[in-house]
Amino acid sequence: MSFCTNCGNKIPEESRFCPNCGRPMGDVAGPPLAAPVPVMPTPLDYTIQGDNLQVVRVRLQPGQELYAEAGKMVYKTANVQWESRMIGDTLGAKIWGAVKRKLMGESLFFTYFQTPTPGEVGFAGSYPGRIQAFELAAGQSVLVQRDSFLCGQSSVQVNIAFVKKIGAGLVGGEGFILEKLTGPGAVFIHAGGDFIEFMLKPGETLQVDTGCIVGFDESVDYDVQLAGGIKTAIFGGEGLFLATLTGPGRVLIQTMTLEKLRRELTPVRTGGDERGPLGALGGIFQSED
Image 1 (tube, rainbow, N blue to C red):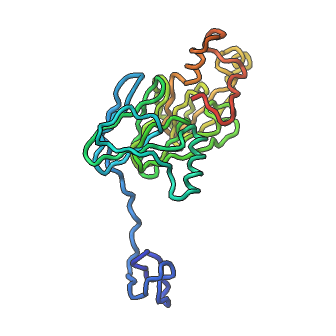
Image 2 (cartoon, helix red, strand yellow):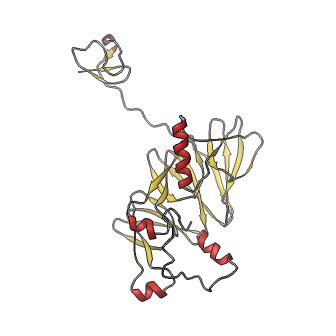
Image 3 (cartoon, rainbow, N blue to C red):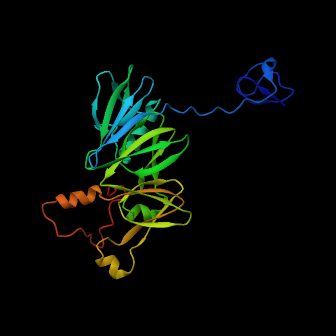
């Protein structure tokens, strides 16, 4: 069996041309072509500065490209060039991409940053919280709460991910929609309060207040369960359900959700931080941020 030197396709002995690309038989060699190796982007030089009002400072180099959620840039040096555009090669791809971004709570356009000479650009979230960096290998993915994407290298893909279990989507606090970030490259997310990180072993389960999940590895199973007995569920102040995360994998949770912050700032409050027994039953496509 021979192989085409142009596309690597197998060519039957009696064929005079490659059935895949049409290359003449005279250009056929014996050994097959090696599979292409994924090209890793140049590592970013960045620092995350601050405490609960953090900013990520990226020292951009020529040839590197960042893209960010609209309105998240805080500053840039004058030599850094920026452009707003939609993702997709065709009109249909651009429209479908815009629909997915709206479902994820993101803007229709991303802003792209490049520089001909070394420069710097900074990004921050829209409310008090922290920034988390993920250094993703080629094909590696992490699931994060909707509307948490801040910025990332252009090699990182931001896609919509649906919660696999109906119960988790209805009452899990994150809605049916999550964001899936896939490498290679560095990507940054923002969420409220402080972050707590767990590395779950296989079969190990973590119970979390609904809405407090920031992100988790694809290997982690996400579901919901009743918050103890009936009395605890009704009078415990945490709602009827708890989110459950089962390892193996990494889990990141937040201490302050945007929904809790809104409740604290509401002029008329009923007192305390508790939720009613039906407080977990939010909208299907909404989350507690």
